[in-house]
Length: 261
Image 1 (cartoon, rainbow, N blue to C red):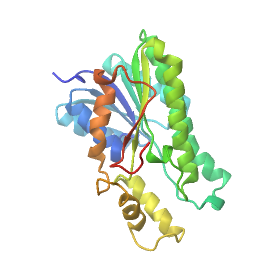
Image 2 (cartoon, rainbow, N blue to C red; image 1 turned 90 degrees about the vertical axis):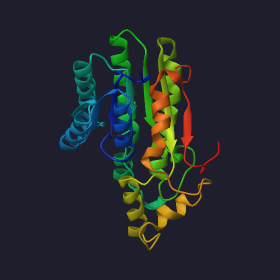
Image 3 (cartoon, rainbow, N blue to C red; image 1 turned 180 degrees about the vertical axis):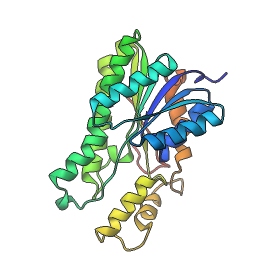
Image 4 (tube, rainbow, N blue to C red; image 1 turned 45 degrees about the vertical axis):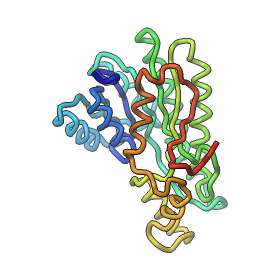
């Protein structure tokens, strides 16, 4: 039996890239997955795929900027599967802007999803864990951009630095209740988010060819290639399982050796 069998796991941003890879893998391990995404149709489609393969899943629409929607997501997960054991705050967006061109609107757009969304997700997860009698795991998706500032991604980097800070703060705040908080930091991953970043480089005339920014960033990985979403499954499985019970407040780099800390 897998260590994740019958664990109730909620994943935001679950239908694309890293989130979808984690949802499929943990469902195959026997976990009951709440597939949460901005699009109900996309969430239902992935949940349907998982159930058709013999797994357990429901699809839920959520805008992580809205506390009431996060509360409803967690309540639906608990109603469907009896409880919530693990919450992955994975939803995020990226935007490419030269440093001096970042507007207040740009800042709010990126940080509201990537930082505020994680804060709300952690707060509501803790409330759920307390209602269940304590204990639980919070896992946040950070980035190499949580460890180094990259131009022209300053506001994105700031939002991911915030994820690490909030992860550490939550670990200190709730550890005595048996609630752990950790995050993992992907590097350059072949996902739709990186398509957006790469296009932003071209739109801002920082590169001229498709995938030029992606390839140049990926070339700095000492393992010699860009990441695939599947490269993040192992760390997600570890953090969601009892194997990580004595770990909290940590940021695990899974970037092929792009950033050493």
